[in-house]
Structures are given as structure tokens and as C-alpha cells.
Image (tube, rainbow, N blue to C red; front, side, top):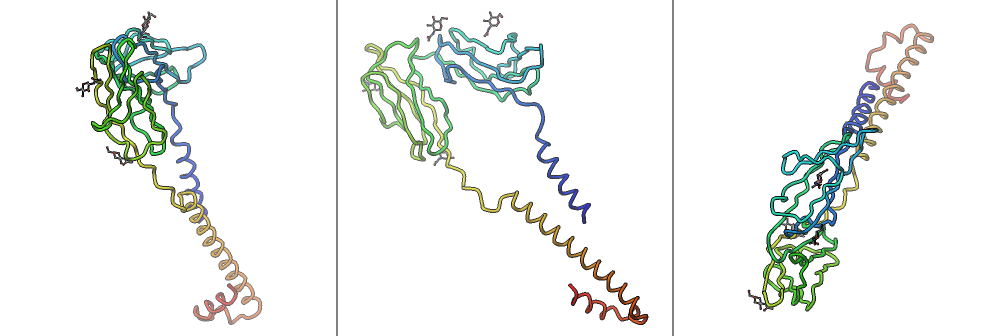
Length: 256
Ligand SMILES: *[C@@H]1O[C@H](CO)[C@@H](O)[C@H](O)[C@H]1NC(C)=O
Ligand SMILES: *[C@@H]1O[C@H](CO)[C@@H](O)[C@H](O)[C@H]1NC(C)=O
Ligand SMILES: *[C@@H]1O[C@H](CO)[C@@H](O)[C@H](O)[C@H]1NC(C)=O
Ligand SMILES: *[C@@H]1O[C@H](CO)[C@@H](O)[C@H](O)[C@H]1NC(C)=O
């Protein structure tokens, strides 16, 4: 029984340390927009542990290793060919998850910090113009319906995302006398996960441990009382050891 218990403990211990491997590097964008227009600037930063005296960083764009080895990858005057999925790695990290960068040749572009949000999170949409030229009569649309209008450029802010904010968005504006629109982009509002059930895994594990302990303790005492009985029987009465098994069971039941 104790072997079973210690096996269970060992399993639990290995489960908690099993995930331990090398830390993953993380790519971040500065400024944070993952959709850019041509001639925009952006710096990609790689964060991850480095070995002493070995400050190395590797960068990949859509799986192709790039020649730059500094922790910041600076893209000045972006072109469409800078588009791709960027990932990086430092001397003591695993390769990061890929971060998409989308560079477009257009007048206007819709930007957001995140395109997938949780219910209750804020959403901020930005109508970005080529070379930041001034725009006016700015309108934001959701699923083809006007949601916000402003004479000067301003962001479209939704303080708390809800299911009804799911959908396809774009912006439209005037550049001088030019009437221009951005591409449409989807925003996905994820429903909040159901609250955790009251019996989580740790609780179940404790219950299992308790049960094992109880069974073990029960066994211990019944073995002990059997021993005590047989000792007493041997001492007091030479005949009892030949008692039928049923009688013996009867006796131990009384004691337990
Ligand atoms: C990007 O930086 C360059 C200088 O390196 C500057 O001329 C250009 O205006 C910047 N682009 C934008 C969109 O601000
Ligand atoms: C790559 O490195 C070279 C030289 O170190 C530098 O001039 C260039 O700007 C870097 N490119 C990027 C995208 O960081
Ligand atoms: C938003 O739409 C996605 C599918 O596009 C769906 O999975 C999700 O549940 C929707 N969110 C809400 C809150 O309705
Ligand atoms: C821009 O063009 C759309 C049609 O594509 C039109 O409905 C809208 O009124 C125009 N906006 C302005 C400010 O003229």
C-alpha cells in the first residue's frame, strides 16, 4: 500500500517538474501594431535568457534564418516584403512562438493591439494613414454598419467587449478630397471560460490520498488486532487457535 502511495507521490512530483525545460523566448513589437503600412517603422525585440558572456540572438522570418544577431530587429521604412511570421531565440532559450507582421501598400489601415479578445476586455481600433498624412471625416464600420464618426482622426474605443462586438471592421476617411477605405479585419470576442468546478484536480488528489491512508490505517489496525488476538488466544487457551474461521471473523469485527 505504501508503495502505491509513494508511486502516486512520485507521479505527482514528476508531473510538476516535467514541464520544466528551456524557457521560450518572446518577440514583442514596438510600437505594438502587427499591421503596418509601407514606410512605417517598427522594432522587434527578443527577450530570453542569455548565457554569461554569450549575447547571441537569432531571428527567423517565416522559417528563414535572418542574418541579424542583435536583440532588437529594427525595420525602418517597411516594405511589403518585411511581412511574415517572426520568431527569435537567445543563447539559453527555446525558439519563441511566431509573431505575425503584415505590411501593406495602401492609404489606410485598421490597427488594434489584439484581434482576439476576451469578453469584458477593452478594444481600441485605430485608423492609420500612409506616412501619417492627416485624415478627416473618419468613420469606423462593423459588419458594414457605421459605428463611429469623427471630423478629425480619433480612435474607436470599446470599453468592454461583448459578443455583439464580434465581426468584421474597417475604417473610411478623406485624405484631402480622396475618399479612402481600409481593408476589413475580423475581431473575435471569446466568451469567458466557465468558472472552475468546485472539485478541482488537487481536491481529487487529496481525496485519493485520504482514501489510501484510511484503507492503509484500517489494514494496520486489523492486522494488529488479529495479532493481538492470536497472541492472547495462544496465551489463554490452547484450544482457540483451532477455532473455525467464522468465529475468528466474529471476534475481529467486535474489536474493530
Ligand atoms: C520612419 O523613420 C524614418 C527615419 O528613419 C522617417 O523618415 C519616417 O517618417 C518614419 N516613418 C513614419 C511612418 O513615421
Ligand atoms: C542588421 O544588422 C546591420 C548591421 O549590424 C544593421 O545595419 C541593420 O540595420 C540590421 N537590420 C535590422 C533589420 O535590424
Ligand atoms: C465570436 O465569434 C466566434 C467565431 O467567429 C465564436 O467562436 C465566439 O464564440 C463569438 N463570441 C461570442 C462572445 O459570441
Ligand atoms: C466615400 O465613399 C462612399 C462610397 O464608397 C460614400 O458612401 C461616402 O459617403 C463617401 N464619403 C464621403 C465623406 O464623401
